[in-house]
Length: 445
Image (cartoon, rainbow, N blue to C red; front, side, top):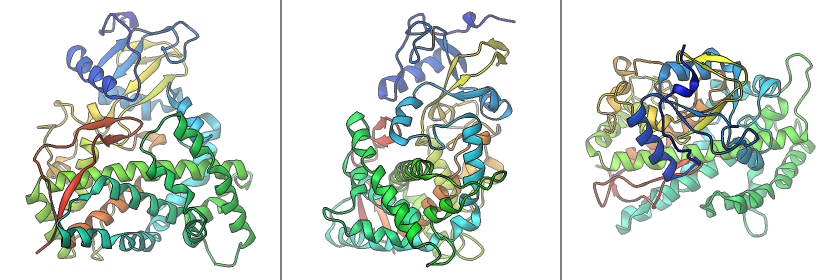
């Protein structure tokens, strides 16, 4: 068995971060060294960001990724980089680990069941209708619509409405407007944003207390706040305390807003540059063929509905979480080589989703690849929501919302792009467009 030191890779260390330089480095590394390689550590044994004195493994092999995320998930914890996220989100599901994460996941999973998520469809419809006038104004004036900004603001409205329900009106009526608007008014995701975002913690506490004071007055919960407050530990019947509720609601806010907003912006960009697909989706939606009830299909990896396949193909090309890490908690054997406990592992869904071995014409937008027959051969070659036990709890909500928004838009309007080239990438915490995506809106025939 080979020693880890014999893994291929560059001879010089690289201080990776969520930025364009890292994406370029990883792309070149995978092209040069293959699907399993290593980066020399940038620091000593006490350096958390430098691999702890060990080489940092890079995985772009679905079988090895399946081993880490699913088969031996308990042996691999959160890796380097999550410290920043924890500063932003507290100890919510995204950053928590071990028994704490298991307990929270069991408690909160029922809130994301299909019946719970399906019951929020009306809230999404309401949020879309609230911003419909912007689309109509652009269609009438001929001015382009910034779909990246529109997706961002609509996405924030949807997740706030899904969290707070009717109580959202109290936030809208505050002096100075809704305080959560800073999420869409601030593009940067730096330390300054984190400090401002943390100032929203007391607002969430206030909303929780407001709901507690009116408990039972409005019947069964129809929003995430009510569902989270009603969650109980299956063994102790304990509820989330105030700190736990705030951490999890803020985690849901960021995770549920930014990933869905980015996906929708990329989807509009792709559809505008592929009018034949846009026309096919419109015909499907207008025919009421998106589900048995004439509404959106139930999301899954494959599916017979084109609007659903468009969303998945968008997530393949532009996975919002384009890079994340894991850390080996104990000695193991990975990809045929021993991996010592403490080794940091770097994974990139962006690169995996464009791997030519698992995807034909990987740079091409082709929703038909997600037909039943065209699903990826390896189950872990497509991981926009991660995989295994730590797969994103809100995946169904995110997929349903994207399908619902696209179905509304294409049924009424036809989008065109001012140029054929796709937007440049901004690979920060999430994969966003570097410049605004401005598209022309026309009344659909």
